[in-house]
Image 1 (cartoon, rainbow, N blue to C red):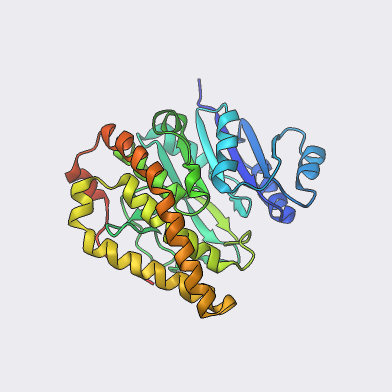
Image 2 (cartoon, rainbow, N blue to C red):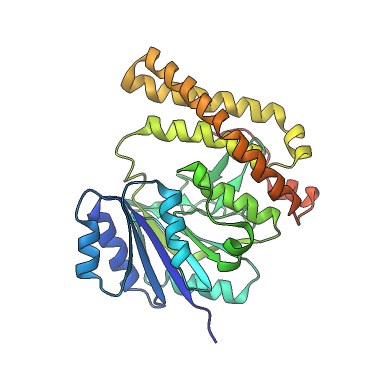
Length: 324
């Protein structure tokens, strides 16, 4: 019996993006067995539109906007497929994307598979070819803003993006869903790390192609993204880095913390001024500290369940500092 596939699309307003996403799913050569749209408290008519125009789609409605992690996890709870494809509402797929991904899943041993994601308005430029994990704690999209015709794709990836990533159901069953403490940003990197520590493999599928609008739902709030990255970088390191890996890379981790802090202040200063930007940095620091008890509890569970050697983990993680 062939494996079944569930697609989960978290969405918040911007109905026009969801329309294109659903239409690209309807045009797939390998149709999903289940499509789940999780409406994360949209203020527009997104939920009514889905119920009216897409009767075959499972609609999950959240009463209020709760963030990416909560929305995705609501979809995971009702997903029935052997494989689960997480897909942002601002993504569209080539007609054979799901077919290519499922073929690779059937033929290989990886439990996480990443398509090639290109920019919607510039399809000669890469948005992501899977995710890498820097030893300084920073996760990065592989190939971001590189030209498609000259970029040398890596043979190995650390993980996949939650914006367009295929996961074996067993990943969620064994290591858990997205950590809702992250709210948004780096939550998929945390899942990648937990899955890797548990012994799951990841694979990049060059032939499977998707297109991304790019932070379409952010609404220009770059300061909020910078705040989340500052906060969640610390959460990821504390939860997921084995002690010996943390100690060996502490100087580069510290430099990355300072880099994230500068990005937050710079982004917030543009909109709010320096004094308020510094206050926002302080508030983000307190918020980070408040999340530490949760992270330490999770850390004990994650590290006890580790199935990969430190040597193999170091091989998977790429050395180096932030590139921007």
